[in-house]
Image: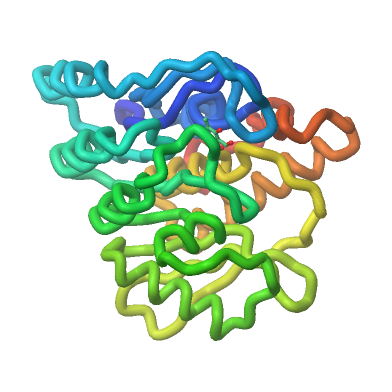
Amino acid sequence: MQPVKTAAVIHDLSGVGRCALTVVLPVISAMGIQACPVPTAVLSTHTGGFDNMASVDLTDLMGDYLAHWRSLGLRFDAVYSGYLANCAQAEHVMRLMRESGGLSVVDPVMGDEGEMYSALPADIPAEMRMLCAAADVITPNLTEAALLLEESYTDAPRTDAEVEHMLRGLLKLGAKRVVLTGVPKADGRMANAYMTQGDRMHSETTFEHLGVHYPGTGDLFASVLTGAMVQGDSLSRAVQRAADFVYRAIDITIPVKTEPRMGVQFEKILHELKCEQN
Ligand code: PXL
């Protein structure tokens, strides 16, 4: 019998709205991996579609928090980082990734649908660029890719050549692998496109565009992807499993007609995530 694998997960704790740690922790656990959270901030709700949140930035705690972990000699099979509340948090994440030695996944959480999240500092893209350079896998959406590449955002359908151009630009930041999520294609479908340094061409998995947007689905995607890779899946298999799970979660949420800002009802399908590599 092997001990369960471990993942340090760096994200905020938003009390309502199903994103960040409230998504990451159950998903990673359901995949049979011990999730060890490093909370970057606590918010009463996420910032996508709510106002007047109560919140606290936990940057001041993070140094001591991780110093304690260091004194315990902890190592993780993966370090996965998402929403950072403050630019100073990036250094801590870099150090944890470096010292941990396992898989590093950076979801450069900064915005969606062309808008940066309201509570983020304006200079966060520079820090995220630095983090991406040190990562094994990065998982930007189109908005985040535009911020990382300092390009303007458009949600116009992309040709294969345009997708590959973006992926190559993102790989130039230094990450070993890039997964670009939620790319509209000319046939009306959406793609998750991915590429590894040295690949001759990129790959895509496409899915039907369900036409509704829920916050937190990027966090769901990155969580399943991280879990799958820790379980030993190839990148292509991990992308497929993550895409399938997010699609299912959206598909079962639409008929319930809940407010989109409340997120997807992934609790109903958590049991579909396999504990073992399949
Ligand atoms: O799902 C990304 C996310 C994470 N954390 C906070 C957010 C959002 C998206 O709105 O507001 C605080």
